[in-house]
Image (cartoon, rainbow, N blue to C red; front, side, top):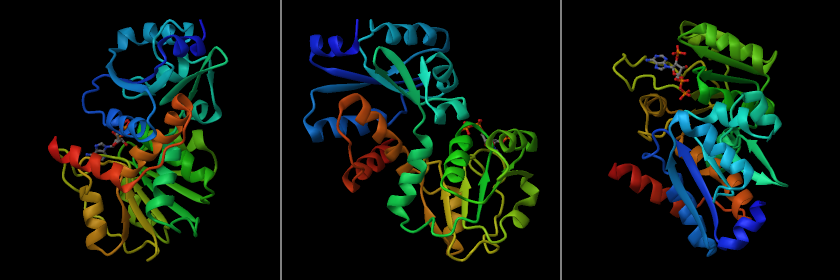
Length: 289
Ligand code: ATR
């Protein structure tokens, strides 16, 4: 049964976000906003799928038995989504993780839009941020860091330094993403920040019980950009320090909004725009919870 036939039968295109847990996901608000804006008779639902049920969930999607045409995948399913899809694209394959699934020609395709979201957010909210692409410093070597490394490399940064508490994880990423990517321990921060044009935090540094580290942003280019991909809270301890030192900053909420654009277009056929109105809606929701 093809997805075309499914959607004609129900006359309602349905997409999902699945994770475990899922209740904090803001994706239904984002896609619901766009569905209403375009007047599309579609649905976007949050599904809590435990790890042991994920493979069955994907089987249903592949066979066309599922009511869904595609969807987003979040923690902890991104790696499995990549592995189970029929055709992952190059971005997802290099990351070993997918966040967007869609049916096409009877196949389940997979991509990863996190890197796109990261870049599109900066292009939108920090215009000219990539005029100089010499040195980027990325804190953290977890799942979220990978898409940022890939994106920054593909945008043409010449030297990308990945600093992590567990330096071995940073080394694995340097090996994975090629010769422009270098690993270092957090103790090397001051040295690696020399002349940096971009500094990205992908960790929860300073937000759990651990001590917040004090960061001196002055070795960076004075025109450099500091950004965080964490958006709860929107002003992270990292961004607060950068702001206090007069650096240009960009918060992480825009990445969440922009990463949703390509998926919506694939499932619902229209390319949405990230507006101030949508951003305000999510900010209000973050303030409520
Ligand atoms: P995610 O997929 O969100 O990136 P993750 O894979 O658990 O999550 O990675 C979390 C990142 O934050 C890692 O880089 C982690 O460092 P380690 O690899 O050394 O664990 C980093 N991190 C978390 N808490 C930290 C802390 N208190 N100090 C320094 N780094 C921290």
